[in-house]
Image (cartoon, rainbow, N blue to C red; front, side, top):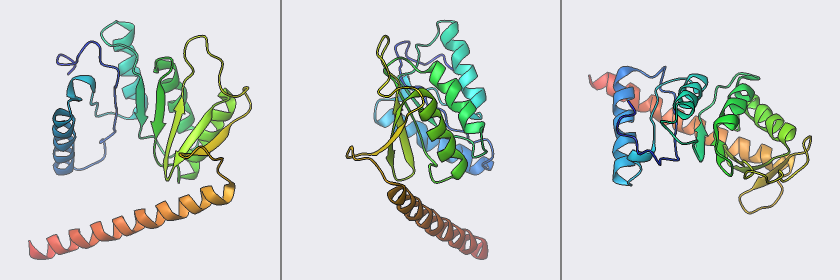
Length: 196
């Protein structure tokens, strides 16, 4: 699995395709790898088909054995259960290199949003939000965090602090888009089924 990984690779991404049917898994994983190759990132990415906790622990073992460097970027496609995202964040944070970026999606899910904000609050971090995506930067070695522990801040990409109303508006927009995409996907499946 990791024989072709560049030893200086700093981006190890994990996406859990655990519950997708076989057709979609193969197609999406293939497209993902083609895109990585096309843009020159394939040597720097470790695609793992595993839940986040299993993937993080697997990467940690490779880092501990000195087969991989600590990742500079980790993208969590997190669980949606209360406190599970918090556990994933803690494990990913320990694995992440100093001055690295931890990011993810599904900020419109209450459990994810609460755990991301709780983690930021406990560690004195700034959370940058864009629609349902979030990003946190791990301080460099020896650098103090941007805020004291017990404080956190949610910022939009333009650097402005987001109000609760703005966050709720972003949530509603993303949920509408998500519902529209689901509706369109359901219609395509129905059309395909009728013609088969």
